Image 1 (tube, rainbow, N blue to C red):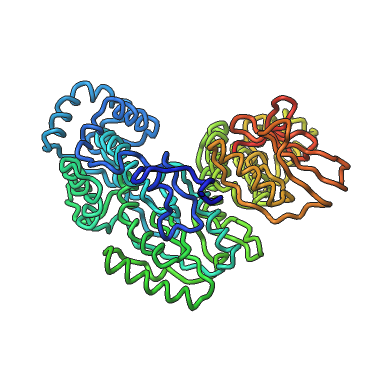
Image 2: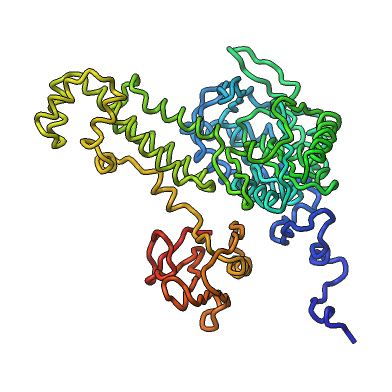
Length: 561
């Protein structure tokens, strides 16, 4: 007789792939298990034909499409992305034969220095468009081999993962009581990667010697500085498509070591935060991790920037946290100062830029900024930023109206009374002070008509669709539905603060619905329904979301989860 547990589990043939996947490896307790779809079948094969897969026509087509989409500056040969197709027609057969023979030599990268916000410069290496194409094609066949074995808590430059996931995971650690962080900063990580150690780790899974030789050639390609090629003995140049994967391969040993010790960590590229329960434990972890990085991985830790501190006193990927129980995500002070510095540069009154172009650049920057930092609680920040940006634009416009007669003419066209036009036009105050005076003549509607996008509107559209009063059981129900449909779900649960008694259950009429029944609610509503429409979460109007994000079948649809 089989037991109840034996009846529940399906029979799995011994030695099959499903049986291997059913066993969760040690050290991954609490982490989502990897599905068979996430582990490529090629990861268990002998990758001796990796070069042929790299040179496959379909793989090269996808690589070409990605390189064209990314754009970028030309390399040392001066060939642009727009000229890549014509370049391939004349040179591809020769390049392909050299790759197959193992005699291909990449061109040196072009050195570009980008100033850092905190001082100093970041060294970037721009490969030629041909090398970018080959690196992208190599990345597409190597990524499935290595990514399936990376740690779950490594979020940088990985498919299906993003910086927001890393910040949310850090927030969960803080909520669980680990309110000390070991912030480790690697000094010039991409410039100090040891080539021998990196190639040894690549060779663990890549058996094609032609590919290993090609990767080594890219590492030793050199850097072109002022027309002189300098050989690179260490480091992987930032700017190439292959560099992020190589960095993850090297730092995967760090992830495995932290997992073996049972530490709670989050890593995004070379930014690694380890969360502990006390300062003393953090100091012990700091010293042991530094010994591991400098001894076994031959990397250098910046001890001045590394610290054991409270999470709300540190910065992680531009975010920080509040010291409350929920560890509310907020903007780091340096993030705010960098944002203002960039806006000041765009709205500088000493730069003679047409107002239409200035607004276009502002929209491009601010909308992208809000899309990234929407995870933080920044409604008040966005409102103040909008006011400040409009004032700076009024300052630029007043500077453009240099002459008194021009100011009178423009103010008169805006509907300002005649006496006020003369008073303001003859004022001796500077443009910044006058930008406040002419506020009523150039209101918000004026700038919206000019095409200026409001940061507050963009933020309110992109905030999490769940209200703060959403109880945990509803999150669990919705998460179960999304997992059954294999849709991404990245919203952590919030503390329930709902008025009255609540009951949540699946709708009997529609299995894909979640029904929330509230008694004694403020609006005297008895039923509220959450419905799934494709990959979007639809909410009936009486659910009470603050803003509609679209309409479908009489519902207010929230953004895709």
